[in-house]
Image (tube, rainbow, N blue to C red; front, side, top):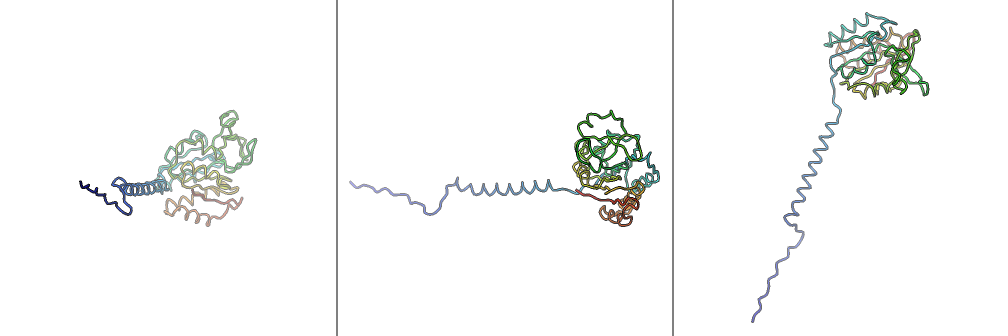
Length: 265
């Protein structure tokens, strides 16, 4: 009886994958490509975009009683309206903390604080520069925010009237909504000494902040601001260039030697 020899299957030499295993390199390649595309899309979505501020402006004229200047107000309104803005003006008696809090949600592209400013030291703590005197108030008002340190009480040099004074962290924590690249001009003493107030407005969506280093007179602040507005909105000069030209033309305050400063995010 002859036995039949069993034929052995030829073994495949070299590296060999089953069909199932051969799919994995393609799957890994597709996943890698997908991850790259997702990473690029995420980067582009987070990349800051140039924002055109809305054509709406507001002037908070807190100096309307101590240093009235209707020529400044009329000139600013004329320049801005000819530049396509709608303009709201609030005199001292209409300026409140409630108004301040809602400014970002009102879609303003330009906010001008023509108010008292300065440096103050809380009862316990160090000096805070760049504070804004916003609302005339009685010592008993807004006690919760005063006790929590969000507001200070202060008086100007030439007045016995008490003001609710706003430090930078009030802007950061208490305002409602966000600006859409608004330009903030703080026409007050010491508002540009440090970057704290500028950073507070940037956290609320502002696109530029202009303040003043040191002490300035209202007349100098008015002249600088009108010249700056004219260059930006009448002559269509870019903000940085307009600021540099205005600062070079006017120089420092002739009386107090204070100087303007521009901060960008």
